[in-house]
Length: 172
Image (tube, rainbow, N blue to C red; front, side, top):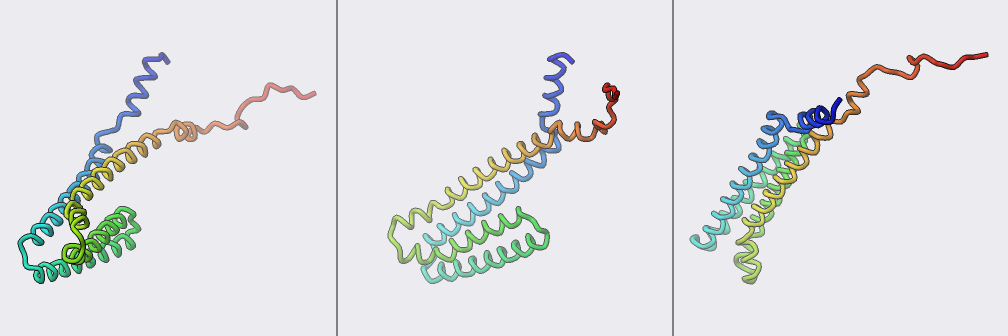
């Protein structure tokens, strides 16, 4: 084989097929949709803090936290039944969001202004988390695909054994 033939063969093996790319992109898009939903949720919480009366807002936060805890339990149960790590991660994310929601009345009505600003800008932190998560997913899946292309699998499928070799040794 010439050098150009080898490089062409390597290029075709390293290039990620369309099906794999679509699968990776679908995982990333799913995470971006979740990030957008959480971002909108936190923006509505901040808007509710500004527009609603204190007691109504506290009651709303309790209801939202209860709903998120129910969603978290459902995700954990489904992840356990399917033995799915992805659903477990989503469940952990929802658990963190429900804890934040439970803690918000204390933050908004009893803490200082610095903590309020931190929680009001939490949508930005969540957007950064999901952006980093999507980048990690992309890099991990591409690396997983490239590792699956190892030549060792091809070599191992050949049924060549050292026993099959003819010996040149002569016994006296």
